[in-house]
Amino acid sequence: MMKYLMGTAIVAGLMALGSAGASAQDKLTLALVPKNMNNPFFDQARDGCKKAESESNGAFECMYIGPGEHGGGEEQVQIVQDLVAKGVAGIAVSPSNAAAMAGPLQQAKAAGIPVLTWDSDLLPENKDLRVAYVGTKNYDIGVNLAKIVQQIKPKGGTICIQSGGAAAANHNERMQGIRDTLSGKQSAASPGDRLNGENGWKEADGCPLYTDDDFPRSVAQLEDTLAKYPDLDAFVPTGGFPQFVPEAYRKAVEPYKDKIASGALALVVADTLPVQMELMKDGLSKGQVGQRPFEMGYKSMFFLKDLKDGKTVTDPTYTGLDVCTPETADTCIGK
Image 1 (cartoon, rainbow, N blue to C red):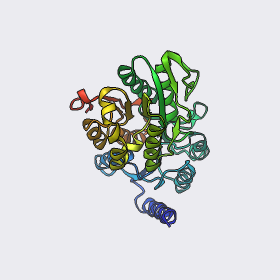
Image 2 (image 1 turned 60 degrees about the vertical axis):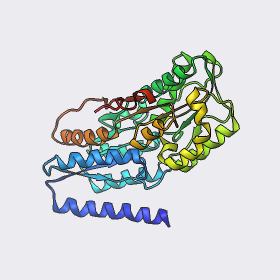
Image 3 (image 1 turned 135 degrees about the vertical axis):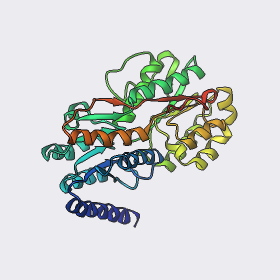
Image 4 (image 1 turned 120 degrees about the horizontal axis):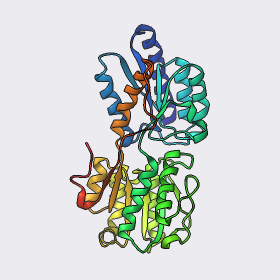
């Protein structure tokens, strides 16, 4: 039933787009497509998109549309195909499955619809299908997560990395950053080479874990892993997955609060949404490395408008990082 209702809502949105296009030809419809719409991280990108719309003096509208739930990217691919068929003026998409997204973006290119990627990019061989990437330098998220871990555990140890989807380019780049930094060696490609004792670091059996952006599953994975490996030295999610269900996360992590405080367990998590910062301040993580999703949504809209006006945009455009620890919690978020 949920999937049916979700699909109905998407169809209704696209039907509304069609009628809007017919009645307001002078107003561009620019689509911002997240990986899913039940994610507080992407909510901030939506807010940036809507802020840009309000400042455009009626030049464009932000159409925020995407899958309602987590998944492997099939529904997102269908949504982008539908947007191309409807003839939107521009598309900014965060691909769930970088390889699969190449198909609809080939259609967009053939139709003359400018495309940006944000948050997550395409595979290197498909980057000609988009004009620019707007967002985080994802490799650097991994580097900075690993640096915090190294400060807590300078002699190394056993680590479990928790990621999003196995086909999500951004999370694979972050995993590569973690692995390269901890091992001290540059790997050839994402997601990097599995840690097997380099610099004292090895990955626990069964890791990395893949959440597919299923937040309750991510908490269960965290809880199960900490129970299975009582001497685990580090647990590092490449996204805020378990913290996006804060009460469940709190319940799972509270028993390990003393280990986190002492440095016995390096629990370091990506993203710095307000609820996550509160969890860190309460001693339930030892560090957070955050992005600026509001800026991604905001800049993507104006960049698409620039492209429609025949202007150029910078590729890539990086929106910055915030590296936070309990000691810097009150000053670490960039403006």
